[in-house]
Image 1: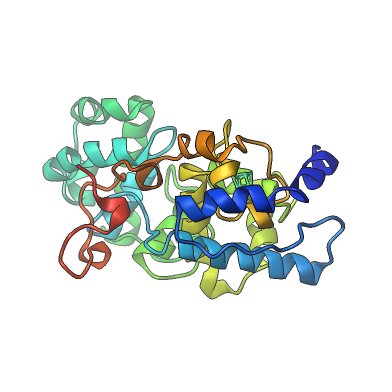
Image 2: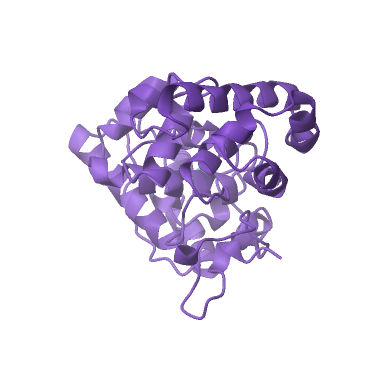
Length: 293
Ligand code: SF4
């Protein structure tokens, strides 16, 4: 849509953005020419370069939902629709304290579950989903969360997005999580013009080796939550501005853009309240994004 205009802007973006980048994050700034009718090979190279740059910006990227096991992750992911991971993390401790297993939640009184889930929004529908999901786990999977895509997507309330979150983060099987951030960013980067999530998943998956898929999803989603926002992307403080054909869709003034940064990039707490050991630093303290206070 804004293809021509955005590409044109991108050709003048890097220098100005690069200044902000150096201030905003310790990231090496590259001056790569943005795309216009770029070849498939060039697209693959640029996409992988963006992912590599994002890996340096978010070396600690990980799922932002608190969970101790696959059951908690699948329930938390279902609850995260239309709300923040932080809100879910504030809600699930009470839920899992009262209903620690699929058997417990399957047998729960819906009204009591609704009361716990109220802060997450859409609490009646979400209550139906997590109770239905738990019943299906008990009846069809012996109370265990299955690790295969074809089984996961048959569970009530579980689509491909949730299934890939669970596969990637609870079972270590590569998956691409096409959430709202992922959809917006890959279109801004002109990785694909598809709008259907399944087609986006296939198109983007083809640009990367499978082993990169889970980390790629984290990098893109973290960038969407912190810098490349839906309404006001912080282009002037964006470490990958030189690689982005949509540079200029948001605030390009470095100082103003810095004020738009969120979570740890803006000097605020992250979303996880219960960071796992793997995300703690050598001194046992939460790594940067997890410094929730
Ligand atoms: S904030 Fe988003 S739109 Fe702006 S330069 Fe960065 S990636 Fe591109």
